[in-house]
Length: 301
Image (spheres, rainbow, N blue to C red):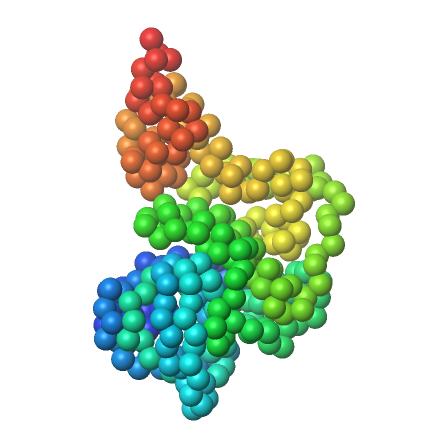
């Protein structure tokens, strides 16, 4: 049995329901966890955070009042935060928060090893520490806020989350933090895309894994590239990021089955890797403007 995640531990201490969580693929044996943490109570008391070689990134969705915080035993006041702003906590430092507040936030827990794996892919030095200017108050970071917002639908239905998409979000946030708060140099622009054999191999791998359970690191490894290099080169070669190309293949396969088979919509949904029939219907409608049953009826007539 796997050990409880950081968010599972915090939820247990605060007596909350199990959090809505998404797991990004491992980066050099480092797991990245996203979670939507919400509470309408204001009586959680003192919350000690587990000490580990990791960081916690929080993007607030509600305005928060001033709260008390103890860092390595020293008291500070964390200033009020507006919705949409973000803050960081270095979990190497013993931290206690006074959580007598209602809150709704998107949070990302990642070990330092994951940050340094991204730094290595960017071709820069390891990051000793992030510059956490926002710890005592908050930081306005539109990049992190917008990327966190992209995950909101996935928290409602984690089973439908496309692994490639989640990996892209994790990599984008880590790369942004490495450059903005860790002093990493921006990556050099990719001059060219993938070699023809790499494009063919990546597409073959994706087409045989239409269930979406393949991660960005898997595809990059197949092509002998780093994740960041592969993602940029794939988009340059195909005009689309891997997760979007994958969705198009799933929908293309679904259209083929609608026309040429007698499978039910539920069977087609399962064969093409959608979470369930309703998920299939929503994605199909978004792409075609009509539901699968109507699309099939019109073309057969």
